[in-house]
Length: 323
Length: 140
Ligand code: SF4
Ligand code: FES
Image 1 (tube, rainbow over the protein chains, first blue to last red):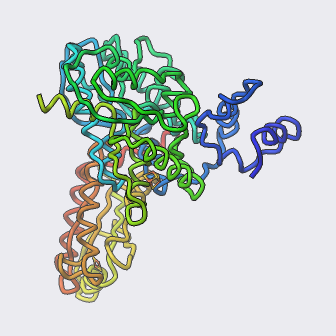
Image 2: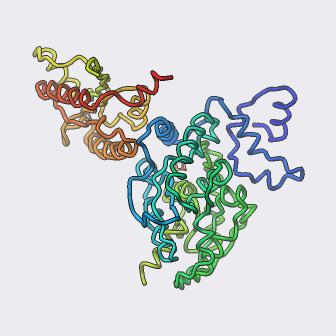
Image 3: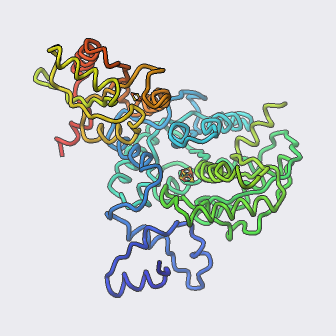
């Protein structure tokens, strides 16, 4: 394996493309530390364009689903029609339904959508459930720009037709893609940004720790919103050894590279969480939730991680329920 | 539309359904020739990715067959198949392709049932029309 530096050098000077472009997790940690401000993930993204995809996780089923969605007019990521249809606020659940079907984990992903709707309702922002296609984040980062453009075009049209002014998402990847790679006529927010100012009337009194999703944190620069949301709900946030802009990635950021190296990363991340002695590890991205939970289950026989791993919205909404 | 002949893919498990298909053959039962059989060791060998890939390539319908529950050569392979197919049907529902997948248990003794299953499924798909992904391919 080579370094980012030599990779860029080889490509720009000798026009040699290397397999290493598929090893990068595009989490942006190197970008943050680079004194010259070299945006390596962006370089990787461009280099990947049109090339044979690297090692896709779960035999590429998630990628294939999005591919099919790009070509099927009638397809959508969720079937639930709920919420307030006249609302100017739209909630987009992303691919949660597919996570439930194909991740084989003991995690209820759909509850993220339910919790988000419930929290929005509680904040007097009752939203309408948007039925869109996959945002195309993985396609874009896997080098399949053609499919990405198709998805983008159809989604943009659907969003325009829905007439919403604010699009709320609970997924860090959707948030990054819809705000940076799309050109939407409406405002895009991550649900944590609404929750930070909300008075939910919960006093949770739980010790938690916060995992920064690379897409929400380093890509979008939002570190504080999930923490503020947690502390205004009464939870005590203890930081892990690496947090905020130094936070470690869950390792499978674009549904690629679930290998020995990224597993070591997840294991180390869980160890950090364990060291904080928190009861709950909070994520704000369903993908991080999946991959970290997967590692926790895998380690069950050897390592006892006593904390739960939960999505921010689920954590908050559960406590609403108790009231 | 009238000249539409569906392309059907049939997965048969080695121990029951494939023998069932054989029996249909040796008993000279007539059924439409639209389907191609792929033999797998157990119905649980069929993965979501196989079905999605087949649809992507323009297959109009996919039939998965296996031993009756309790008869699987690998004890509970087909119980997993059953669970998995429910998930795939759910996924196909999201994609708008729901009716293009069918699961049926066919034992080695059920040549007749094999014939009927294929015939019914071919008719169902014929009525449904071609796979929209196939049209996409042609337009390009
Ligand atoms: S970490 Fe687990 S859930 Fe994530 S891609 Fe790897 S196997 Fe799948
Ligand atoms: S062997 Fe026939 S279903 Fe398993």
